[in-house]
Length: 199
Image 1 (cartoon, helix red, strand yellow):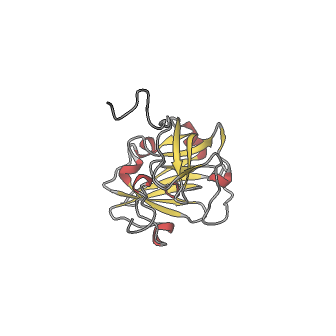
Image 2 (cartoon, one colour):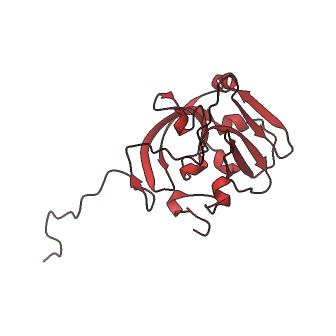
Image 3 (cartoon, rainbow, N blue to C red):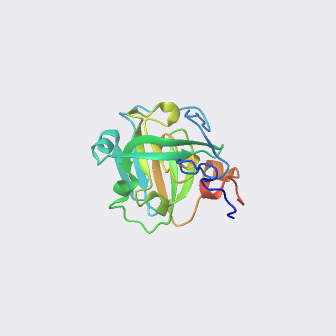
């Protein structure tokens, strides 16, 4: 006699992919910021990559819009434990922006209008894994979500996707940013629950 009755299949499995550990699904897009929302006019906006030697590579808003644009659909995960599936973005790949930048750096520190900073390994900005995003869900990125443009690095916790991004400084040593100096993890992999230092 069989141990399992004929036709018994166990509990149905969800067709949805798993969320990172400790996360819950939300349909909303919560607004969380480390300070007030800066107002950044497009005619004065610029994005600057600064190499470890001090060389600068600059783009105005119009120059950024003239670069090849990509549309991506990604899940995003906040360290405060919410996750949002299938978010739609449009922007410029960091691969495009870093092409031609002469650097031996291994680290990057993203800078925002308003003074926010966050650190990332340079490798995590390459390989079609990071963008300067200016469009969300088919429209201009709202200021409360980082518009006119934010860094989008969806494979890491969302605090690494710096709102109101204005540039990236490359370096040979890792320099912690705003939340990292307050005890957040230097890397921030949601699948490894790297929320705080020591995780």
